[in-house]
Amino acid sequence: PSSMPPGVAFLSGQFTAENGIKKITRCGDLSGVFYDRAAWQAIPVDTPVYRVEMLRSPQGEGELFVGITHLQPGRVGDEFYMTRGHFHQRREQGEVYFGLRGTGLLLLQNEQGVARLEQISPGSVHIIPGFTAHRLINTGSEVLSALAVWPSVAGHDYAALAHGFALRVIEQDGKIQAKEVQHG
Ligand code: PA5
Ligand code: NI
Image 1 (cartoon, rainbow, N blue to C red):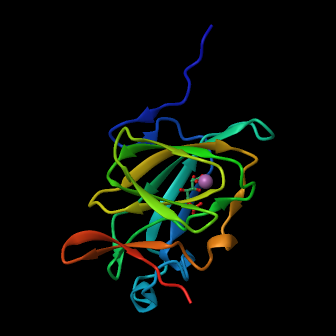
Image 2: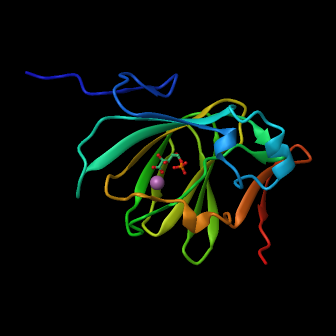
């Protein structure tokens, strides 16, 4: 006896079965995330920026969550659409991202504030170590979809990066550019 496990349709980057939680994050939910506040305010609050679909899975120590993030292409001013980004509440817990569709960047930042970027594209595998904040950035012209697997006990800490990451990714002179943020 066997049963059909859930799958991912590579062309659409979506789960083949829709059985879990879905959450849409809209432009209005992302106050303070993009540096150009006037450009952010000019976008209708109900504009979808990203959507997360999750499989149902057990919860508790040792269990794993599986989710797919679908990040729309677009910009707020010259800054590309991105997820809010977070540390895990349990800082030591890592995560794996896997590129499914579209192209972009995975922004990683350690607790010392040192940031780096990895290119994400269909098939790319990203190991996010513990103690490392992470954010997806869509620098392409199609939806960026990435599968993520993380411990269900990890939790999300958004507050620790409420003042932003150390790098911003913008389009300038028709090119994708990463800018260091000057604090203080
Ligand atoms: O677990 C993850 O890191 C992802 O599933 C993210 O939660 C997802 O991409 C949405 O980003 P954020 O939680 O930063 O809004
Ligand atoms: Ni995470």
